[in-house]
Amino acid sequence: MIIPMMMFAMFTLTLINLIMFIALTLSKKKIFDREKNSPFECGFSTSFFSRFPFSLHFYLISILFLIFDVEITIILPLFYLMNTTNLYIYLIMFIFFISILILGLLHEWNQNILNWSN
Image (cartoon, rainbow, N blue to C red):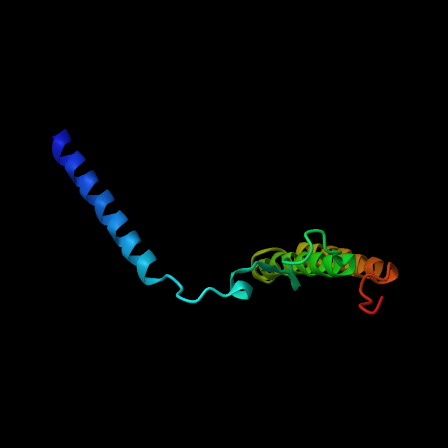
């Protein structure tokens, strides 16, 4: 019983390795371009300086985008809850959540985080 299982495992591993080898040989690039092979992240090319100055304002805007994106995913189930819960509890919860969002937006506006031309 163990021998057929070992033979099947060896056959499977051999087949997997053969398929990977064929895929690697067929997908090789014939022309090596330095620009295409270099890493490119966040709009900055990393081929010149390893410690290139990074815009802190760009980082803050991206964090704000992620925060508001997550908040949208929290707001969406509230519309489903409108039909399943008490309207009074729903309104208190919705107003509380929206007021926290508005207070956060006002704080970011007061700190001049939303001004792109700094």
